[in-house]
Image (cartoon, rainbow, N blue to C red; front, side):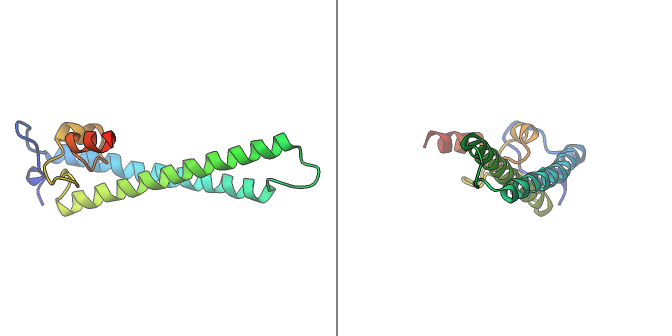
Length: 133
């Protein structure tokens, strides 16, 4: 697959090797960053769960604070996992030559959108429709 074969919207220049390499590099560095973030969040969660949230003599405010921290860490870890999955998917689409095709309508997502948000899976129109629901 050549970069110039990737889909673009009408009026856009074809993808260049440098543009695709830049996106691939950005996504690969995101994989490393997100994996590290997940590891840190999971270590925090283990500590919070090990300490427990209830027990004799624990102040209710401390219990509430620990529960809040645990929920926050779980949310961060889940968000990082979702972004990691999206990043892996984008890299797979690049490798297969299907990068830049809207998952909903099958039209090109647009180079500008992908340069700004490389994990995009929907064109602007489909994303707007999705957000209105």
